[in-house]
Image (tube, rainbow, N blue to C red; front, side):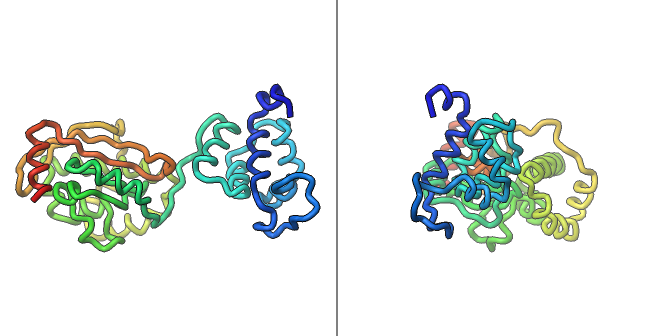
Amino acid sequence: MSELQAAENPLGVYLKDRRTRLDPAAFGFPGERRRTPGLRREEVAQRANISPTWYTWLEQGRGGAPSADVLDRIARALMLTDIEREHLFLLGLGRPPEARYRKNEGVTPRLQRVLDALDPTPALIRTATWDVLAWNRASTVMLADYGAMPPEQRNMLRFLFLDPRACAAQYDWDSVARFILGAFRLDAARAGAAADVEPLVEELSRLSPEFRAMWRDGDLPAAVHREAVKHMRHPVLGEVAFEYSTFAVDGRTDLSLLVYNPATPEDAERIASLVRD
């Protein structure tokens, strides 16, 4: 393919490059008597459960833009990583893919080291359904001891509505709870995890009248603030103010990094002293 053709059809170039990197034998295809390395077009189409003609047209830059479903099938067929899958969507549709919720997956050691490096600033990583997967010592001291909870109980909504310590830490628990519940609805919907939150919703509706009433209202926040100032009561330090920020996790669009940065140098020093004890 010439440089001009490659510039006009970057999706086709990318697809061809990815399939020629794969070992046919690893997928049960005969590896002998191949003029070029990797999988054939019809083999990719077979794995993706799409028409060989349609896949050929994609590589040749014909037939128009593919659907998100087709790109997802091709990504699985080519064993693409999350970053490669995102690049495929950007080439094919001009946008990244929707977030994918992954149930019960932990974080890499690299992400845990990022959290630990943020001490004494409280930080944690949560899923789209607000299950807490990882945290640092400052988070344990200032927010909640998730390490003392069974893994299936490490959920921010469960802590907020069922643990009296969460209520005591908030100056206006009702407003905070309503805002958080609305943001939770949005996160779960965006990640396509509505079915996964049903057991949690049923449990909290049964155990918390406040949750049941707020969930029935169905309110959504006017805006989801990824950055805000949060005032909390701490049983040892008293009032503490945090600049609260939420960040996407690179390569994991279903995860969020939450950072509670002390709002003043005095608060930072008080928290640091408590973390060191």
